[in-house]
Image 1 (spheres, rainbow, N blue to C red):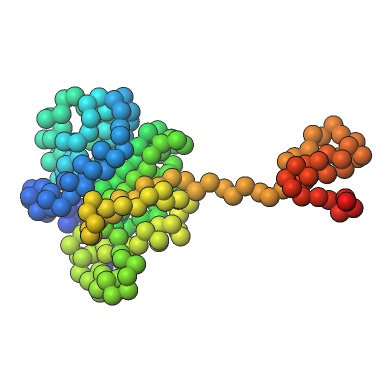
Image 2 (spheres, rainbow, N blue to C red):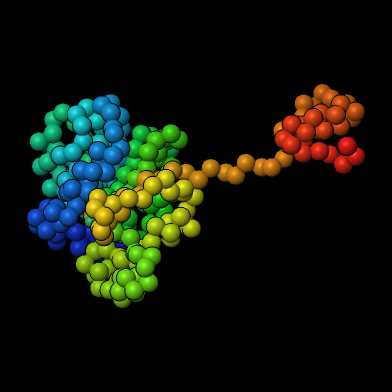
Length: 245
Ligand SMILES: C[S@@+](CC[C@H](N)C(=O)[O-])C[C@H]1O[C@@H](n2cnc3c(N)ncnc32)[C@H](O)[C@@H]1O
């Protein structure tokens, strides 16, 4: 089964009234911890993808701007009720696909997603959009179930994947898949409890590797100077050119 936007919308529309009751027990403490760990300050701007019924609104510190994006109108309607209870936040609820965001590059101090990267059809495109919309020095984080690296557990997770997709999420995505298929660098993975099926992933953009060439030479030098400057540059890095003692 493909997890198209239409299929996901249909599934989560059917959950919207009972979602908090059914999933809140598992998700709320982890969303609370994620937001606590980010240490968001008043006046800062957060993009939260797959906002759902807006459980997270209870945990943002006052004065924060929260942009909650979801494709499911029925879930956002539940979030709308919670928004009314937080007049101290600047909340924007937007019906939008998290893998095709209508925001400019680098608009947000934080871009986060809770329990949603295994719900979107293309998690790699989701990560690309997270990287694009986050400020260069902003913070990026996910909390989610990821497939285990332990073979017997992964085997079960792969086995049940066709079934879980029918009820709204996949169980065969590993953190490693995100690292191998997107330009991210994982800064930390952790969990709320020692044994926990949900993982926090804090990450940033992978920096391009520094080249191993000596520093560029000033262009006004003549040939002799270039030779001497190159020797000096290499010697300074503990290297020597051919012909040197
Ligand atoms: C499991 S719920 C998580 C909701 C919320 N983050 C929480 O912690 O309770 C997943 C949410 O992701 C939303 N979603 C799925 N695909 C999406 C997409 N492509 N763009 C935006 N939201 C999406 C669903 O509609 C649903 O509300």
